[in-house]
Image 1 (spheres, one colour):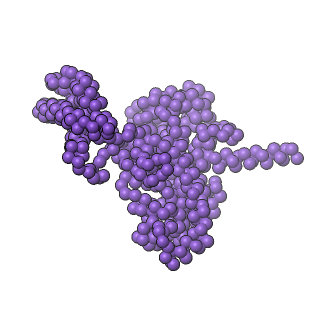
Image 2: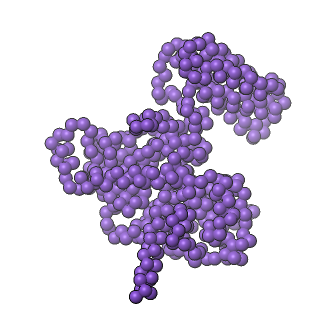
Length: 479
């Protein structure tokens, strides 16, 4: 049973719109709480927000029966706070149980519920990227009103991409094979134990005595190049263990199994597939001298969506993660984002603008850097935008030189570097290294970070307005 918000005021609590938040504090928590309080206090905005939460979170589950669960408003508050602070689950759980203003924002008082960390994790994971995108659209509309945007005023955007790093180690053929093999041994032993199958009594010795010992002898490129026979020995040990795992899997397929055992078999197949691919690539690359095509490579078996991103930046020859493209407007709100699972900047320029205009039709101008240029993008952006500030690569012809010398183009290019501040803000909101597991967790973290950054921006605008109001009141009193 879930409610959108607390049904009644608890002892020691306060109405959410009346929670006192100090405008003098420069910490991030008051800014986030101010932004969320504004979302709640605006009646029409709150109705639309609660309708979204009620329809999008577990839409196939009845919310009027069963054990009481966390309120939907509390789930959103904790999710935004986590990404806005860039903190871990332990700190979020401590804040949810001990921070007075935060608990009042969630509708709790002195004797309200205390949350376990796993409860917080499970509830925040219910938020989907599509829901968060809709909430972000509501928030940006409210933020534009606070920022003083006039009705009908066009939006001017600036678009750029950055790499949101995944929580992976540096990949080599040797350590990826070791990752796959140790997980194969562990899951094969667990499956055999649950089905009373033999062959894995010494699984710890197999993983750390046989495979790890062979891996340590070739774990660097210098060792592997100097001793090809060690590479052969490492691959031979892995193939021997992999053959034993296949036998266990075949025996398990002939037995009746529970749902948990079926899931264990699926995990075992997954890691065996990765191990087989790594063995094949080691043979082809190291022993046969073949160059492995980039599209065949996997850079993490735990986060297989990880990409090798090389933008030629000084000091960072490559990054391991997934590129994320964002559009920020002149009021410093992030209008739209897109996770670039495939392709490069040039493949997403027109799509980014088109998707952003579906939510914000007032977007009539946008600036880019040269990485987004292509003749096709120039033509498509000229149709979508009144002022597409997309510089041309290489030598400029007369037409391009004339367009890039116009006042609106020059002004957009001067304002474009400000998008780096938005990217830096997103990295402080949890996107410096995304620790969520899987592609779904990555997408949810990116959407939450964008939403949290916009909430924080709205809270800072409200805080500055309140500070100006207090200064005016002090001057009037002094007069």
